[in-house]
Image: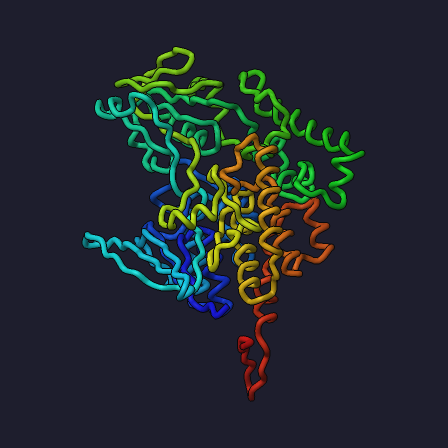
Amino acid sequence: MSIKTICIVGAGFGGLSAARVFDAMGYDVTVYEKEADVGGVWSASRRYPGLTTQNPRSTYALSDYPMPSDYPEWPSGEQVQAYMHSYAVHFGILDYIHLNSEVTDASFEEQAMRWAITVRTTKPAGGDQFTTQYFDYLIIANGIFSVPLIPEYPGAEEFKAHGGRVLHTSEFNDKQAVRDQHVLVVGYGKSSCDVANAIADSTATTTVVARTLIWKLPKHLANVLNFKHLFLTRLSEALFRYIRLRGFERFLHGIGNPLRRAMLGSMEWVIERQLHLRRLDLHPDKPLETIARSTVSLVTDGFYEKIESGVISIRKSAEITRLEPGKAILDSGETLPADVVICGTGWRQVCPFLDEAIMQKVTDRDGNFRLYRSVLPIGVPRLAFNGYNSSFFSQLNCEIAALWLVDYLEGGIKLPSLQAQNEYADRKLAWMEARTDGKHSKGTNIIPFSIHHIDELLDDMNMNLPVPTRVKQWFRALDPGDYAHILPRLQQKYTRQVATPGEVVYEKHV
């Protein structure tokens, strides 16, 4: 394919892992990041108070670079960003990353078979500089959490004109900014509960407005067992029906279904009592199995205790229908005092720099991304996505996807026909739509099937883990280090060893 130069948009886990892999394989890599630091959602400009990982430290790392052992079990947002920065330094890719550099246009020149990338760079002294560079291949790693989605509330402009504020959780970076104010936090996902919990002790009032209640997973089941041993294993994924059942999964969703339901039921029973959901009137009133339909959310330490003590108020099955100066009106007709509205209401999956004609090929009429293996847009040359696979192991899915992509570009993976790729995308989107009630982040949410997705990529590469390792993963939380050998195997696959006096030199195959 005569591909040498790689442009990567974004320096989150998707961009960093792609830069590391492609650099290690001998490509010329350039990364553009619009923020002032690496990290993506963990960047200093996007960290809300109380932000921590959903995963324990040992499971939320890239395969060949563990998180520091002195980090807490659930690292803070600041610690994750520091880890990502040190990853870039350790593997020598920091020099390839251009910070404060936003890609404003990406156009594919068919005759030259190259991408023209226009970048706006913000200078420290002020002012913007626009430059255009050319690359053989484009990897979009701006993430599915790149553009905040804030509801358009009637009356919002007047509300703001009188001093009120409406912002996304990712835009809320200073808890002191809401001291002694009336704050409404919209949503019941992790970011909403984290923010409400972090600010409740210093506000005049903190009220969570939750349209829908979802199940929350305690960090320690029955206050004893780390949730990773139950929910970050192959067995936990097998409890939910995947698009294609194999091996023991066929049993669990066939004649073994009573056993599967009993396992989920016992966990539901423990969580309900541990969190006092009935007593607090916060039971989702749907089976625990429904966590596979939208999102998996970890309990914020202290959140339920503050609800029980009245420090945090909650309005469930409620929505804001209008904002007025100093107050918000709910669909029930109730009026709440409001100085600040903080929205944990999700994200828009967009690539504003891509040509509209290309976007029409990448997405369907509903805006769903049609990506083969969540990486390749069908029928679009020299373009790939990385990180469009939200999951419990997003960082590892990014890394394995980058390895899969470089193997494909080197000729190690033969894609099926365009018809077969389109059938794959149709089948997967239809399955996602059915299992999530439409809440699949435009086709990018693979929760809770992280390991399934990794298996598919490694099977394509003929590099899946040995059977004993996979068996271990059925009963123990996934260890990213199990996959550290994949990159060296790829390097070995596409190099030949030439012995010279006193040294061993590796040369790429021509």
